[in-house]
Length: 201
Length: 431
Image (tube, rainbow over all chains, first blue to last red; front, side, top):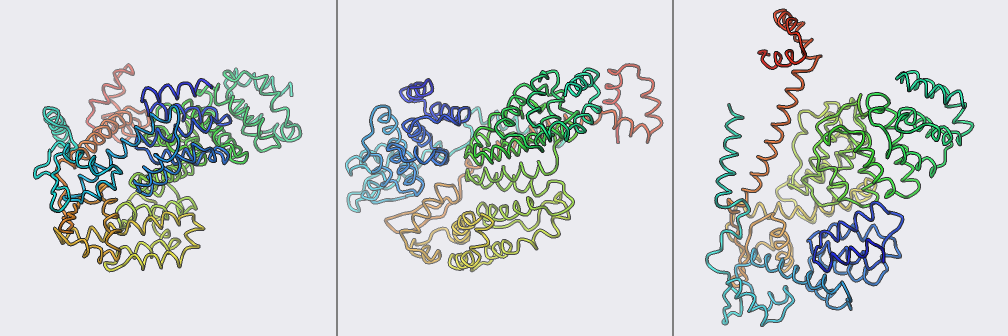
């Protein structure tokens, strides 16, 4: 294994996904004529997916030569990328579960599954006031019992009569606020107000 | 050849770069035309850091001859790595652009765009004085990043705002500016950041020019489509600083795109109409390589319909919304999910009552955008203040003002040292 590959797999063990991606990009930039192995590029694509950078995962695949694109691991990751691109979460989970991942891939796959579920849950909470349990379970790709437990953890109420979840009546404002909070907000407002006054003067 | 070598060394030592240029130009046919291998021999005998200007002239003349691609590319890579930028800036900056252009062409012809990326970046970092300077290498670098699909690397360069364009120092021409922003727009289209893509393409349209160019026309076509994807409408007018010669004729040469944008303006236009239009002009869009963008624009038309519904209704049955979008209910729900994920709308769905509720976005969601804009404004204000200071202290400006105002002339003549003059300039009440 080359030094770059050793570093990449070390970063995977440490969970430093952005460093994995950066390492592969730098290698591709400086040694364009000495590509790494298919396994390394598959790890790179998965690292991009865990970081939520679907575009970079696509472009990494498109940069590869045809022989590298046919690599078993690269092909498996490409199926996941396509499913995520088409917003087909069940297909993405299926692709993750179906392929026999080994070695360093296991850490990445587990992280990616958790990341996809987290994002899907955030989306469901943003979109739905009420949602049937079966549909939530299908979108999150987890069994019904697990979905009910997960919903309780985010204060959703389970209505047994309609077999659906209802969001809490009052939502935590910090979930939707995107700006600074507390004393930081006051500092920001004062700085910006001073600046605008100086401009006007 | 020995005579040429000696003359080059002598001219460089004297700092007579005018004679150096003339001498190398005159010897092009004799030395490089008949014996392209002499280029390598000549360069080997000239130390790069001492004779950078000579290297630049030789490489720019050699690219017109029968030099081999691999050899030339190796020589240019050595040049970019070891050049003394002071001997290029203001001395042979125009030739530097020619060398870079030829190198980029060779990277493309040998199908090795990845090879050129780190070397061009090196060249950019050497030739520019500040990260805000535009150089002839900028568009070449972004072009190779596009070909190699290394969009993130191009984005790192594009994120730096260009504030200085100095043709005499860097050899940059209007075509470099147009191409840089055009390629930059294409990078952001690839990254699906259509807002930034529109900004880059708009800057391309506003580059100085005395007539409509092929680059501007292509940029305008992409600009129309990106505007439709981002906002659902085409801006009524191009910015005021867009050259008038471009504004007058550009719409005439892109009538299909104007008609396409016109469909988006109509209140009752449907997805079917847009798809029919696209199908009818498919070959034209494909020839311009804009078919994919046009298809994305058709999909983004849905946001206009949803926007119109949002403006009128606070809640609507999902089935009604599906009827308005002329889509099945399941697909409408999926479409809404995508729009909410992309922060296009803040609608919420109640599956029990099958209703869609349209709510106004919370004020806090604007906070981050406002703060970011204010930070940008602060940085821009600082830059403008600095430029104002530089202009006031520049010799040309002071001379021009002195010629208008005799009192000023008398006042500055009494200032003895340069430091006094600068202080006096800053205190003088310019009108």
